[in-house]
Image 1 (cartoon, rainbow, N blue to C red):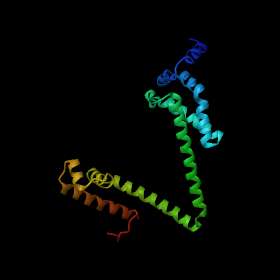
Image 2: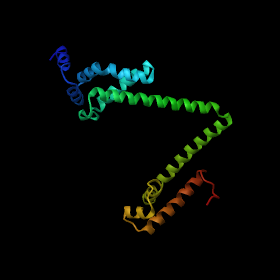
Image 3: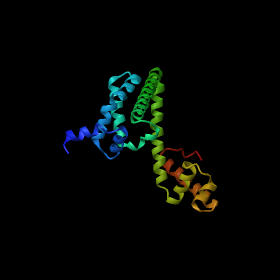
Image 4: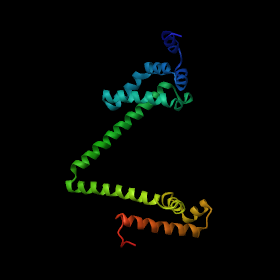
Amino acid sequence: MSPMRRTADVRTWSDTSLAVAVGRLDQDALHELFRRHGGAVFGVARRVLRDRSLAQDVVQDVFVRFWNEPERFDPDLGSVRAFLVTKAHARAVEIVRSEEARRARQDRAASRDPVAMTYELEREVWEGFVRTEVRDALAALDDDRRRVIELAYFGGMTYRAVAEHLGLPEGTVKSRIRLGLRELRQRLEAQGVLSGSAR
């Protein structure tokens, strides 16, 4: 079948048929949907963003997502056009909110005292270092101790729930947690993360 014949066929299909074809990785079907609805998608994005370049980015994003996730379209909930336009509006609003949040952060940063900003940066660096050391120290524990600590402190489970989950006596769970935390403290003290006097 020639490309011209193929294009002519696609242009006679309904939007729903085109959407089904997109699900089968039919690029001609996607191009036809873009031809029919790209302008409307762009118009919505342009009205929200008031920026031609950003609106074009939204159009590309919407159609790329439709290509990658065509199953998200449900013909029982509305037309293809309504689906694409809704996605464009949501994406454009998301960009506006992201830009407003970025400007707010910049404004706050510009109004801060340089000394306070330096302190905050140092604190963020230190907290990142501590998180890394804690993760490494936890990974170094034996599996039994690490597992109960992860469930209790990162999984939010009570000691009793941990015991039931693992099929262990509650006393065994408490013992493993106590010994594991002691070993964690020792490792973190050796790395200078915790003070040796804090017990």
